[in-house]
Image 1 (tube, one colour):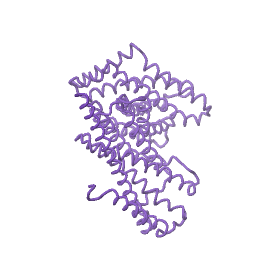
Image 2 (spheres, helix red, strand yellow):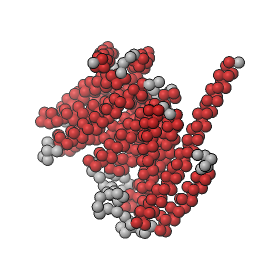
Image 3 (cartoon, helix red, strand yellow):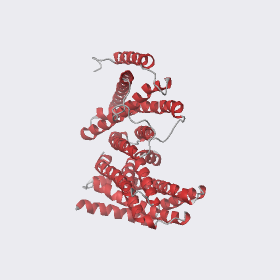
Image 4 (cartoon, chains in turn cyan, yellow):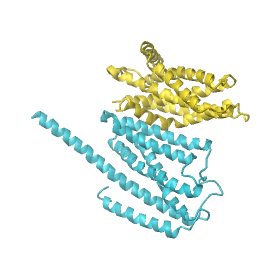
Length: 232
Length: 225
């Protein structure tokens, strides 16, 4: 894949895509009726959230693949995704309060989706902490995969439980019920922006993956060297 | 049949170990009573407000006392490589899980009874009118919570700073079990005029069953080398 689609091209594509997204966010999308200019953070906030959630879905499937096939690659994908997804999830938690303060008048409330995002963030932290605290790295892949699967079940349960809980967040505007929906220009901006975020996400992911593979190769070489020198 | 036998043997072994050193159960009960005491003393509440705080205090107590117990459950198995011994034995990993879960459930249940008794005393609150519902909620909530605690305890036993790791794993995942159980408990205590209490119990039970089954199925990978 590196030959067909080198990382530099990927990076250039990401930058170009972000320029287009920024143009659309500030110049193309119409101003929102009640919230005004501040609503434009929507095009950063929602794509980050979707990307963070996509990240955990990837962790779940990579963990399942690892548990079934014991593929090293699947484990490395899960690990890299956790690190990158964590950054996007942090982004959601930073842009959310920035938007909430002028619109709702408060920085934070224990509303359903805020709770869900915060729990997702905690799950990312737990997953990454587990990775770095394990005594025997040989067992890391198995244990992290188990946490990846249970964590994703928790995300699904969050989705259901928040419907049973009190909520203040706007009802879904995308694919919501009848009466929901947004200006087509807003929708286009949102989707282009999400595309830019996904492009960045996959760029960071492949770079982190390459780093992880280089690390494990280096470990292998060191082990072989140590074996060779002990034989002499 | 064989699995049930293994389950029973592991459960009895844990009880016997506990009977000989009396470490886990005593610390769980003392810690739970301390939590009830701190909240009861700190929040001097009117009787109407008390109904709001009591479910939270009880479930916070159950949750923290539980974590203490789950930490011990697998930490003790690592000493003298007991866990390796069990893993090498030709038995089903899910039977090991079920045995440990049963022991955790039993210890937490004892601690819960102590906490409820103390809370009834200090809060001057009678559990009797809603006892049936409360027992159901407590059973289902504790089952799911203990199942997660058992598998995460086994995972955390492989790490440095095992106590920290267990809490970091346990609370985000068990969050909804605790929240739904608190909510259902509050409804049961209030005597819920709408008659919606069974829905609360069913939610707790549903979430708990999902986590228990998932933990049971995934446990073999935790033991795998």
